[in-house]
Image (cartoon, rainbow, N blue to C red; front, side):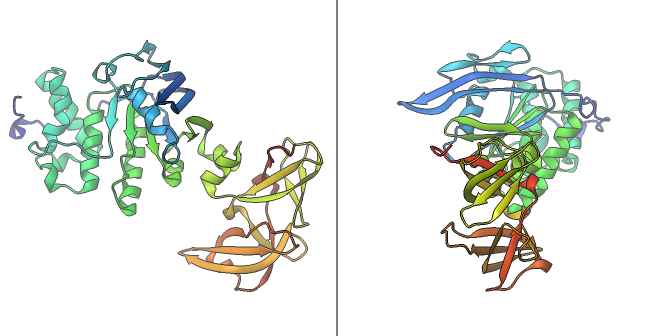
Length: 381
């Protein structure tokens, strides 16, 4: 392989990537994708449409099917059935190298004997890109990622975060229609992950990239994504914007996975076009936004810890005793044992540190109706 001589490289010219929001990535369509291993279904009829310039995250715990779905899109794993279309071209049975997709792994997989410049240039060399065009593309890609000053360094001279940015540049440099990222920040500490999240999102928005990202980290998914596919047991439970997932979960699993929701058992007492009233098993009356559910149906009302507030006694849906108070920086995490006789477990709250109650205090809890989701109890209506 011919060496790239850095001393002759020109000053990088202004970036010629398309402007933000232009959608350099072509739309991707997945239809009824299915994969089994020895009779165990890893992915079960997954379908989705991803628009150009969109940042989509597959979010789920281990075994949910998120990585297998990504590997089928990349071509590293062949589906049992279903189709994958990129930019109007069916790539379902094509080899990975013929799909033209960018891939960023958790492991950086940089060539240790090559400089940063040479690592990023490598995909263009394989494609026979003319030398002048190669230098221009590498130069502008490194500039976008803030790596121009490190072009002569080798991977061992870089931090983990810098190496991951080089890996990202290597995936960007040949302008793939879609970039796939498999937990690329999983090996980094929290502070560095937060920094790289900001960098990845900035680059994605600035270049209008289409990105499919895999993570098990809920906060990371909420920060980065335009839409999130929450996966469980090989299926998509809900595919929506971060705000809709958090504020309007469609299943108890999504409500719990995105925010460790409190689930309060009760019965629908009244349902009108304006609101749903739930009589909790502890005796309190909880007002929720209008939702499905017949009067008299057994339900579970879900409220995120950060959406609960303390209120004047008698004004809330629940009273109880403060059992724990844990300070976490500017927040305090509180658990309250409800009164009323029913053993429904503790209710968890997250409050500003200045609003912390004291251990053993009797408190009342309230929540805005828009922050309360109601789910039917299986077999109970």
